[in-house]
Length: 142
Image (cartoon, rainbow, N blue to C red; front, top):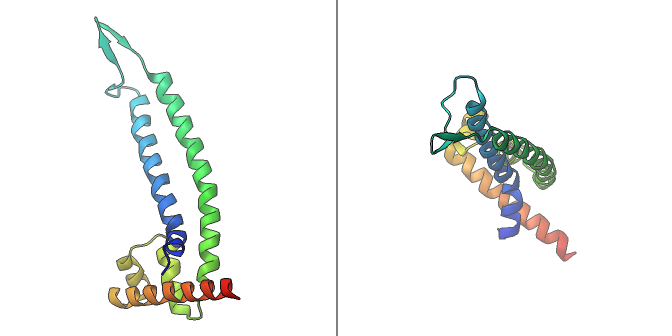
């Protein structure tokens, strides 16, 4: 399969990972803002702490805005991925590809959800990628 199509299929998964990392950072920063939290954001210089709470709030707001932008990109990527998956003839391949590339599930989770072996899910995924590549390449040649 051409690298471009593989990257297009994985775009939603990549964006999902970016969103999760930013959400974890927000959780980490929000714990600092809680009452009685251990404050790692203060730097003691000659017995006077420098308070960085305003910087933390600004970072949280910035991260939330980045998440919103990434969510829009994810919707677009999922739509493009869905269009590629719809090129497949086999419903089982569509199911596997949807679990893997739309729902961002692992091969094990996909196999369990669809009631098949991991190896069979992997084979269906590989065949699905090959068929998508053939169909997209066939379209461009016409």
